[in-house]
Length: 328
Image 1 (spheres, helix red, strand yellow):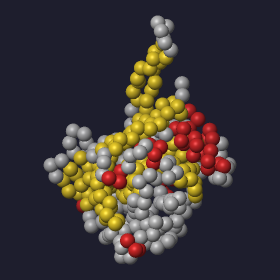
Image 2 (cartoon, one colour; image 1 turned 90 degrees about the vertical axis):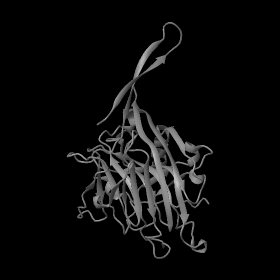
Image 3 (cartoon, one colour; image 1 turned 120 degrees about the vertical axis):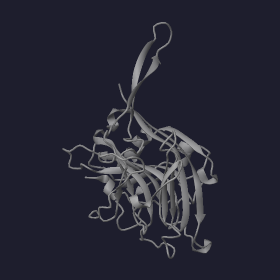
Image 4 (cartoon, helix red, strand yellow; image 1 turned 180 degrees about the vertical axis):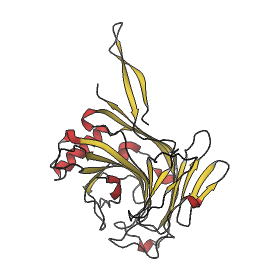
């Protein structure tokens, strides 16, 4: 089962290459203290996007190829670029080079990578749904996505984890409402920039092999400066996955900060205890009932825009990393 084949969801809140490095850690106090080494492992493969990105379409039979922001590689890309619900698909023909950027741009979207010393960051992700919608979106209709995705090669078991750390920095660069204020429906329309991890039963001997829960880290939602916790089923349109979504309240990782005002914000959080809570909550709500907690692994991710309203939006990512530490 390829869980990335069905990355298509939005929740409407009605309220309202693995790299390992050893770091020394002191244990105990006084002259007899010992030194213990902890291995911190990078979860994301090809952090530099050197192997390019596979282009994904709603129709699996379509083969649009890949894009190569940099030199490219004969190896299969680890990253995918998903553009669900759109009229404007990016291709390698949309590539533009400037002195410090490589950019893919068409009438409806833009994806840019930095080519300087800190390449590929910052990454700019813009989506112009004023070009997509001819009228305000109605219930059940599709909406544009611009997501970078990856199925992890290293899929750490939840039972073995001590820490799963997210480090992220970025800022909102644009969010313009392009529909009439009288047409805006909080239950149907918004623009969201977020990270989702798939927490999945990967025990091949289990009858529930492949079952999973979405675990979300929201960064921006047009409707809420303080995004509330969301824990419910993935619904809202015909191709929704029907799986359980557990998405953090923004104050968990942003505190009192918000991306709404264009400030660059850094996030540094251990997600592990919240993933445990997500699994437990899903089970309490009648999901994942056939799976044991020790069968779950962190299997993949997506990051980017979902825009089910008429908005022109942009977000700049200047840092993104996921690392984990296993129990001793």
